[in-house]
Amino acid sequence: MADQNFSKIPLLDYSLTLDSATKAQFIEELRHALINVGFLYLSNTPVDEQLVERLKSHIPNLFALPQEEKDKISKANSPHFLGYSRLGAELTKGKTDYREQFDIGTDHVSRWKPGDPDYLNVWGPSQYPDENLIPGFRQTMESYLSQVAALGTTFITLIAEALGLPPDGLSRFYDTPDRMQHRGKVVQYPVPSERSESDQGVGPHYDAGFLTILLQASPHPGLQVQNLSGDWIDAPPIPGTFVINFGRALEFATKGIARATSHRVLSPPIGSSSPRYSVPLFHNIALDVRVRDPKYELEFPPEILKLRDERGRFLRRTVRFSVLLLYKFSDVGLMITLPHMPAVNYSEFESQPSGMVQLMGRVRSHPDVAQRHYPALFKQFFPDGLPKQGFAY
Image: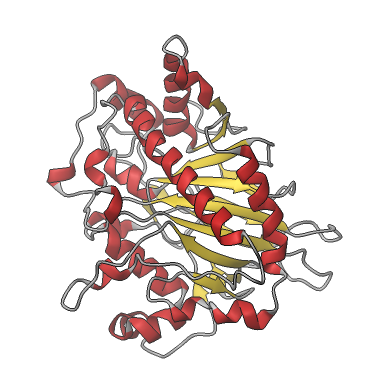
């Protein structure tokens, strides 16, 4: 199986796509990252570097806001799960995720109306702190999200080409721009104290959608990516790059060709002088899409399917055994997760529309929001009442 136990994350140069003489090289490198790694660094993107630096300069001030000001834009206020989450509000694999965050989306007006499925209300307007307290942050963040979302839209066409499809080969999974929202986070991973029981910033997990574009906004290490032998491979910040990874929806939609890879973030080492900051953007697909519905089925060239089959195709199932089994068949595979691997595998994409998968994930992560805005769904997930923490993954 080719490169199943990768030992480093590939670095791709986006500028190669701008020249017909070098684009084929980029597509080949992207194909390898899609099929065998699930992660890559991307350099020389069209995102404005000065804009990125302005955003970085705002982030410490954002988290330094008085607690009462941050709480004014608590996520619990928003049926769209957008806003502020306090430190330690979530668990992954039974351990507290030691992070504080603001969830902020691209500009969007909710199209939900009474009688519509609840999941149509997952997308909507963001909450921002008082402009007088952090002048310029909102404009900077909105511009940043817009540019990175546009990069994601273009990158989707490159993924399609790397999979042997025409550039618009994945467009069926997207709606018109006015009906789409892409969601970002601004995350702080504080330096743990000597008394901390864990170095977990966020525990092992997969991302749900098609594409995540991550800005590592401080020089701290911490991001780690898991290869199939269970080893954690460091993905330290590289100036001038984004980290891109692929989610479970893309894996389902591509019949297991694209690889969603487990990853985690460790807290900064004890004694560090400042927190770790990061800004991921999750490039969403349309809310109504059912990725396994026959109307969305994709047909891939035999040579692309062969690359998948040579690598092996994986279906992840969570069980209690501490063993990893990997079966190499053309159409069927099985991965039994180790205790250090993620417990949530987003198998709901097999049967649910994308919006429902998103809503279910957010209800698990933020039960206080669900209790206020989605009481029926809250009762299904939490029949014993509001837990102290949500379950991020």
